[in-house]
Length: 202
Image (cartoon, rainbow, N blue to C red; front, side):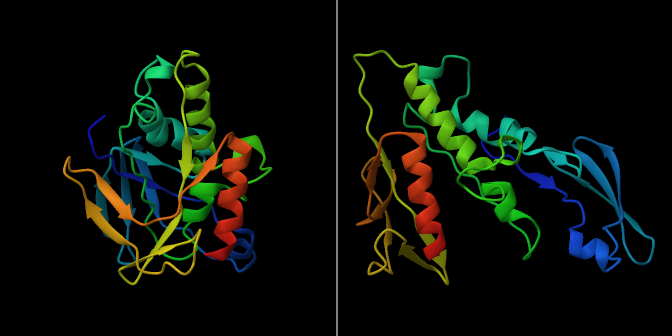
């Protein structure tokens, strides 16, 4: 997998859309990397991505292709990229109602049906799983921060008085959020509980 991976995901019509007899986007599947879009003039355009997730795709499919290589790019769990300090980022983009939150979180962050769990709880579980395989002589500290980027400003969701966090780069070219609040978490449940509470603030 290259350093940057771009995917498209299509969601099925919602219950409201079906009730309103809304039409779904007119696409035709070509393969797992390409789809053909037909516009209102019946003209066709072909779009290609690293992977296309069609309506029948499930949350696990997206996690295994997109997020799992970030959590651990290999089979040795205690040498996983994320545990070894390699940064990874997942960005969702789309209009309101496109399914970004469902893709990232699922129906909810806490106590969610296993099949419907989004990327965020799966990544948290994956990180703690990798750490559990580490040698007993190795100790890890897991810290969590949560920010919101809006109108070109970074707001600290763990301390709302910090509403203009500065993004900086240190001497070894690591990106830092200057002064951002960090909390220590000891297990997946504590991490997801913290994310769930602060998400409501956002």
